Length: 236
Figure 1 (cartoon, helix red, strand yellow):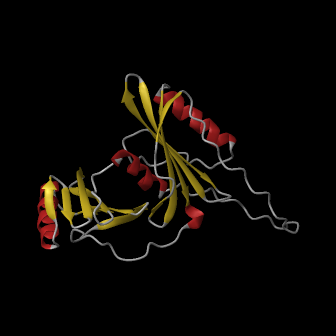
Figure 2 (tube, one colour):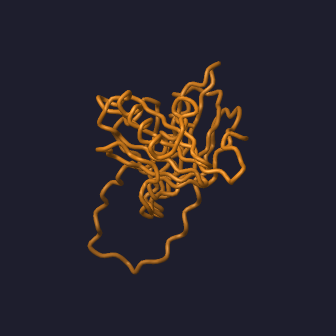
Figure 3 (cartoon, helix red, strand yellow):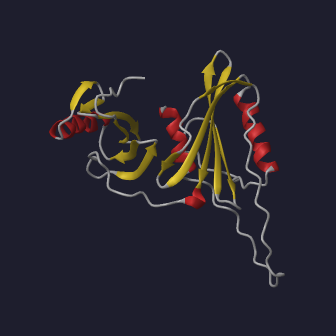
């Protein structure tokens, strides 16, 4: 799940479209035909992983699909690059590398929809294919303040809503050990108990804490889940 969420950060940073000169004179505008929806075609599909159908990250509606393919990463990258190009989408010539996994993002400038593919080895000659679609034209500012404490000085906050479960991802200006100790204290004061490393419970709420070093700081990801009364958060 954590690797899939990397796609959400990438989807929120779609490439800017190229500037197009404005013509001196143009005929009266006519209603353009609605563009056909993009169809993902994953070569060499072996299996598919179920992912929630509708998510919201940073106010942008997100849809993810995850597959396993028998094709190589280089073959898949070329296949998706060709598909994006044939669809008429904008692909940045020299995009910044924002994650270690091979990835490619394209933008449909007509609908302001960003499409991202992230690829990583799955073992036994297979490749995990994470496909993302972000409807940037439907952006709505997130409502409400975070319901879990954030480390002082937190930056680059990204909030998500995954069918009721909330996520908060941000950068903390401290070491991983310092942030972990701070959360143990802060969540304990808020009435939570750490039942296993990085997992805290309070009544029907569960907080999962994930940390990783980030160039002298720490990337923090929090998953907040709430179950119905009498239902275990860990039950399938």
